[in-house]
Amino acid sequence: MEVPETENSRKKRTKWPVEVKVDSVRVLIYRTGERHFTAAWRQAGQRKRLVRATLEEATDAAKQRAREISAGKAGLADFRGADRERYSLSVEAVRPTGIPLEVASQEYAEAWKLVQPASLIQVARWWKEKHAQELPSKPVPELVEEILRDRAEAGLADVYLRSLGYKLRWFAGRFPAPIQGITAHMIEEALGRIKKLKPKTWNNYRTDILTLFHYARMRGHLPRDREVEAALVKRVKDPGKRIRVFSPAEMSRLLNAAAHGVAARRGRPAIAPRPDLVPFIAIGGFAGVRPMEIGRLEWSDIQWKRGVIEVAKHKAKTASRRLIPIQPNLAEWLAPFRAGRGHICTTRTWRCVTALAKAIGLEWPHDVLRDSFISYRTAVTQNLSQVALEAGNSERIIRHSYLELRTPEEGKAWFSIRPEGAASNVVPLSRAR
Image (cartoon, rainbow, N blue to C red; front, side):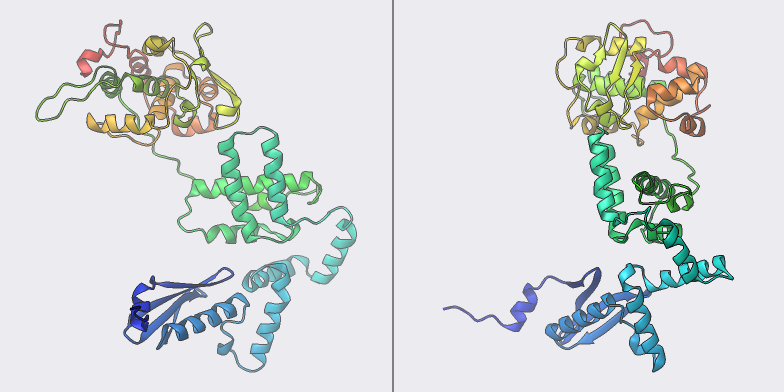
């Protein structure tokens, strides 16, 4: 016999909180008692609530409130008489622009100060007469898809295209209107709403948005006789990342553990040899190739006769080909693999290497192998331009973050780490063991 569904059984089956969404407005409904259902949302920076006796009533009220907020009518109850009518008219007036009322008010006030004693209408009419025929209008989302196609056809690296697409599609979602109406202030306002945005990430967003504006100007959608608005977006001072490197002894321990394993001692289990991890560690530490780039490398990219590792354009993060000299100690570590074919490592290699480091008691800071290479190579060569070319980095970043982190003597010790049994005048692997 089928048991009819009761209101209580339906409530138990409901996944809390219940979400009510209208456009980008989101209201959540919580069960706050046997006969109480609370709808909650944020409005003008404040948390708002309303309580109803049933879930159906709370849902209806939440939908109504979400529709009002989406339509810009929320808060009208706080106004009286003529103020309410003025507010409604203002919201309706700016709706076609896609710009929030508070931003439009700020922009108007700034523009008003700049054009005095002329009126904004006079300036707008003059600008239209001068530029209307020169600037075909195109919405930002269309421009974004156009530039992404253009960059893909140019053969830029997939990782760059994914990053560019993510940021620019976010930008297009905030500004669906034509690009001519977007100001630096509006861009900063939008970036400021992203939670926990680090200085480096802010600057990366700024760079990609600026790329879009330059593309729009090149295509004739922005005036060519003046700077684009995105260039006026402030840069945030980036203190840079903390550079942490392995010592030569720590690198020796890691390579030795991979090549030969570690015997059991002091209650710790033995670690089996993993010689397949040696190329990843050695190329990262002695050539500075990024982990994701190593994952794309094949053994054919190790050009033994020329003594270089070729990171092709389509395998490099920066979509720029580079040749990295094979240091003598790196050649010795890679010698057993000279007959290798196919990819140098798998997608799981990085995880296995970090697990090995942990097993032998080594901390694994972010990008430690690459940071170690750049730091020690800079110390040995004292040539920032050369290191920048080898690492696929900018000379400015190397000067800012890596210069004088290590001494020339430490650099020589780093590039003297050789396999067990090979001649080494600094850090014997047996000692690190």
